[in-house]
Length: 165
Image (cartoon, rainbow, N blue to C red; front, top):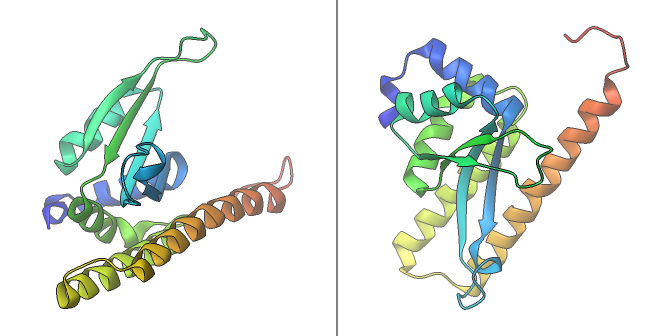
């Protein structure tokens, strides 16, 4: 596990940053490439307008890739994104920061449990069945729903002017 070499304080900082500025998902790549059969991949994304933290994430974890997003509308600032897409890196990274997550912990638990079950099944049976494809779609949908619920709960429960605890 590569993340084991990261200082505990850095793991906690990364988890907090991911909780606030990141996204954990399980995406159907066939939606962007119509010639492929249904293929899902786990990914972690963090986007910010400050390049220092994005490039630091890449450097300290030794994982993923970072790139620049320039908006053509002239209304938004340039953004910087760090993304982990290699399955084992996603698993290692999320496992390392899981104890420090406050907002996205449940999403991580769902994704890691699914990836573990799927890996065990493929090892035993050697292929992906239509049932596995259905379960992948169900996990993808569940994670999307969990994101929407988390956003609405954080907006609804905090009143304007009330302190954040």
